[in-house]
Image (tube, rainbow, N blue to C red; front, side, top):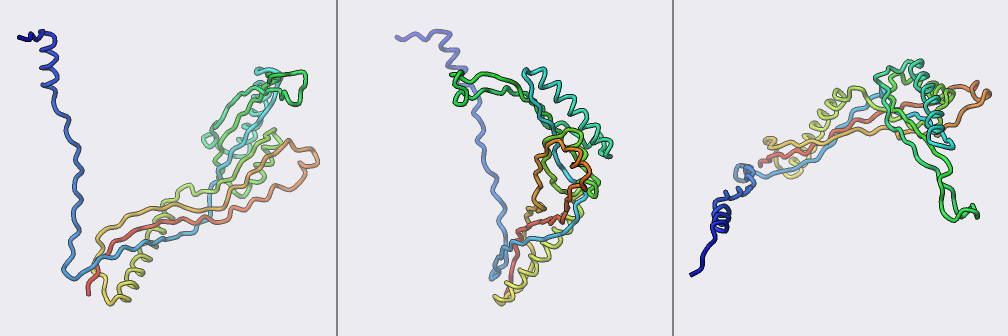
Length: 252
């Protein structure tokens, strides 16, 4: 007769008494009920609203090099402090300036160009510091960029024009999308000898399209360049869009 050890028996009972994991079941979606002889029509439509942007997002930064890490960072800190000070003097609020990148990386020699070095060696360091800026006075954006370059910024990327509060424009685009969907539904229904009875469901998607950002890689300007007019920048117009998918019930 086989003897079950107490420890093994306890383990067997523990396993057998474990609660079964509940089975995750998907809740059935309610069926759409339409009257006999009626049919369904799905319409995709897009609405638009045009607005002039009121803010410009861009990044500005400083990249410096040094023989060692401390030298590269110290030079970067001095120049970046000047850049941030210039931003504030240009009227950019402190809450609209945020550090987006601070990095320090070694610079290596190129063995293919240096016959005396068989392997890459560290020959210096590169420090970079960038801030993301939200600029609200679009008329002087070009002048602000020029001021930053004069203060020592050698990296400026942007602008990305946006709306500070896009919801009113998006609401206008949503209403336009619903109107377009209804007109399209009436068109299809009339062509098929039917009429629109009601809306069964609406789903939404959306966004905005704007001008492509301008990318500037700037170096420190000379005194002659400083007298030049501000860099021209055109804000253009933003196209806010909202797309809807509407399910209609049609009847004879």
